[in-house]
Image 1 (cartoon, helix red, strand yellow):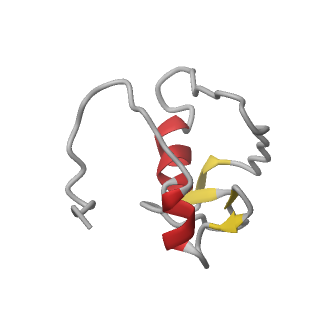
Image 2 (spheres, helix red, strand yellow):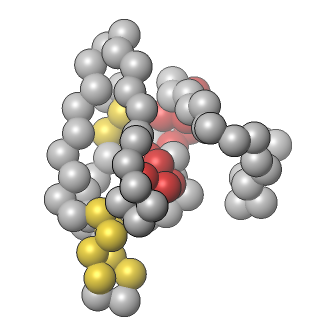
Image 3 (spheres, helix red, strand yellow):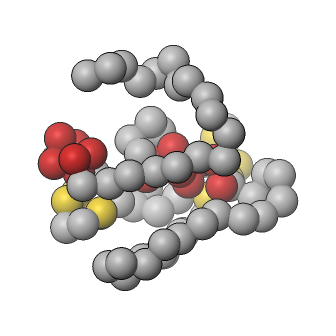
Length: 86
């Protein structure tokens, strides 16, 4: 998947596979695209191109089932104002 802002690629052709029972973490310097990638994986940001599939669910097409099968733990506790209790 790719994400562009104002013609600038901030995530470029990411192809990532995490196998069942694996844990995966994003590490890297500021500006490396970690937050943008996580936002795309969690449906908070739409990719410019490509698609996201998690646990067999197309994230854009089957949001409800995807969200029931995916978990994320962030480094810092924060409240994302784009999320609802629902």
